[in-house]
Amino acid sequence: MKIIVETTVFLNGGDAAIQVATKRILTTAFGEDTEIVFADMDAEVAERYYPGNDFIVFPSARIRKNVFVRLINKLTKGWLQIDLVYSILITMIFLERNLRWLKYPGHRGAIAQALREYIAADLIVSTGGTYLSKKHPGSVAVRLPEYERDIYLGKPPIFFTQSMGPFGEGRIFRRLASVLKKSPLILVRDGRSMTFARELIDDPSNVETVADSVFVLTDQDKIVKRRAAPRVATPGRRPRIAVSVRRWTDFGARDSEIGQAIYHQSVARAVAWLVEEVGAEVTFVSTCQGIPEYPFNDADTAKDVWIYLPDHVRNSVVIDSQFRDTETLLRKIDEFDGAICTRMHMCILCLCQGVPVLPICYERKTADLFRSLDLEEYVTLIDKIDPDYFGNLVERWWKNQDLIAERSWRGTIALRDSALSTVDILQRRFAPVELQPEAVPS
Image (cartoon, rainbow, N blue to C red; front, side, top):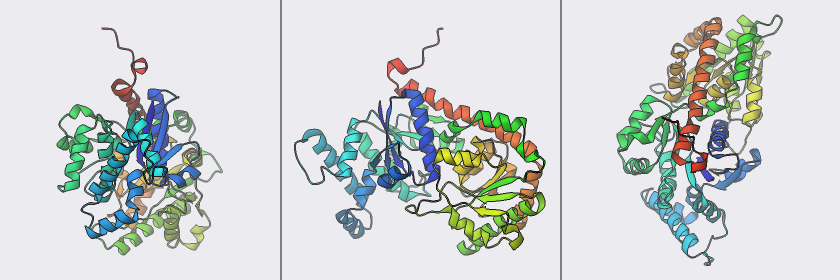
């Protein structure tokens, strides 16, 4: 089979982890010889950082950069952009399918090459994420022409694990509803996403709840080893703590600058307690760092937190700004005994290695995750964070490590099994007959 995974953003390390997991799920479901192509927002850059994967450009994003399209978008205040991009896509597909001999302008370009891959594909998957909601209308608008093009090709997209909804009432959400109704499979992470999806579609049998795909990267041997011999109890060894922070500006009722300062101060208070009270070595490390072509660098936020650290604490703190692909990052995470994480997929990668996490939640997806682990009492909402409260919470979190670790390990294995169930779902719905699971005799 040839499968395109579209709308990926490999330069975001969390999204890259999703793609590593997605690739593992797809090859397990359909065979190691399955050809998987990623349609990425920055395909040329992604190729340099993630060699060994096949990339094509994200056609709509490339078309939007065209001078003519940008002019029309400006003149119509964005009203015609989705329709214009879709029309260009369909015109190029018509030419590729019916007039292959015609050397039309752009027939040798990256967009045309990408569309040939789409025409040849057996299956199209829209990557997992949190981009289908009224909170992210721009993300929906960017993706709509792609989804409608997929439907035109007779290959409506499968949606991998989503935290979706709530949805808006505008034109783009009516069109999204039409796309979701035609999708043969929508995978969601949680019950609320299931409810939101069912509000828009006619056939609820096409919606399945499974854990985030990244949980298939869980290393059960590492978890068993940690359970048998916790390294934090080793005499003479200082506890090692990872801290993952990210830039954030939406703090609800708080002013953005005040909210950021409180957030940074709160993390600094927790780091100081860990260094002063338990003798920890702290490393700031995250999924989004070390790629200058990507607009977000979590190491810069770590430097903002550093400002609030007492001088005597800084000697025990390191800011790691190195880029790591998913496998290398997992090996780095394995060095730690605990982690404070803001980005959800940094949380998940830590859990996959058996590392207990204290989460800071900026969207409900992280709160939903830790609720499923029976660790909701250790969740801090980023717009409600406070230095005194968070400092007390990290103390309670550390002193209850045995209980927290056990719940984390048990829950992570269950989530790994849930994520792996995607393989069976895909095989039963889409695999060639020879790859489908054998029927159980009655």
